[in-house]
Image 1 (tube, rainbow, N blue to C red):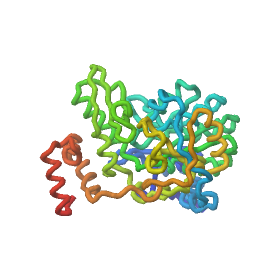
Image 2: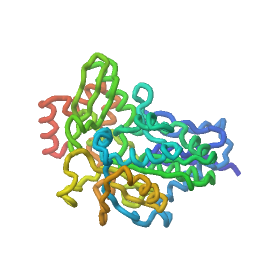
Image 3: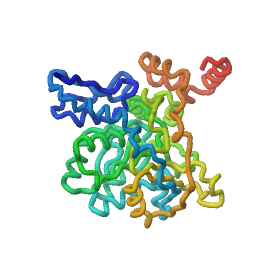
Image 4: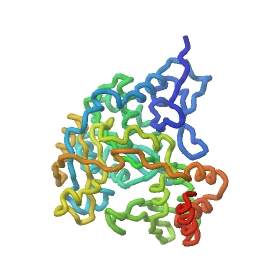
Length: 386
């Protein structure tokens, strides 16, 4: 009997690409939808109905129900790079950089999110400290996983040590893929970030195009969270163009924190808990000033680490030579408790995205529209219409 391809529902699909990677005949392709997100598409002419994609989807459906993912973290730490210069080049306290550095210096490989050609956000691999630099910095957009799952499988079979960094759903995807392929994970480490939700790559692409047109130059550098220009708690984005013009502001950040441009699955995310599918969970240690008001209040950034597994604990211990560390009795923040709140105007936002120019869209939903539209939005909120 043929096993029909049954993938995640569109409202639940995270775009992790596990189904695409597991397909033995490459019958699944990731394609952009009308909102600019990647979703799997099955070519029924290629499909041999083996059921491999069904199995990995089932594994992901029940992944967080496994006993190993019901236990709370082993340890909680606040951590930061000892080297302040390197810490300032990181977006929080530099914990990912410390973990990745240890893997690379041991001859291993690191897979993480980077700006690729034309600032397309995608996962890539680093084998050297120089290559690792491109993974630094917040991207605030969903990363294109490309073909990294299969590459990681090959690396592990070749005896390489591998660290994978991504959102919790991406970490769940690669963990499920490796389990189904029966690949040993003894040398594999997964590190998920405390995620606020992933905005559309299509939105990000249009944002960059608009800014290039507005500043009449080609983008040379993008930093969506420049601590040097403001502070760790209140960073701003910085875009540098080839005509020596610079934009500093919070425009894309407004879209990000509004939750308007998030993927559908983010509003019901099952990974917004302290129990995560990775070895280590990292993020900004928001609230550290309330826990330890006398320490580290210099706005250079502090990371939090939730050690999920014994393997994660060993990796963290290896990186401690790079870090100042304080163990915390416990830790939480809103993104570890509930999915981001869905704004009332989200459906309207996506309808307008199809109808309006991107500049008009920004004017309607952000401060780009100026004070008049800002007042209008405020009045609509008072009338409970926004």
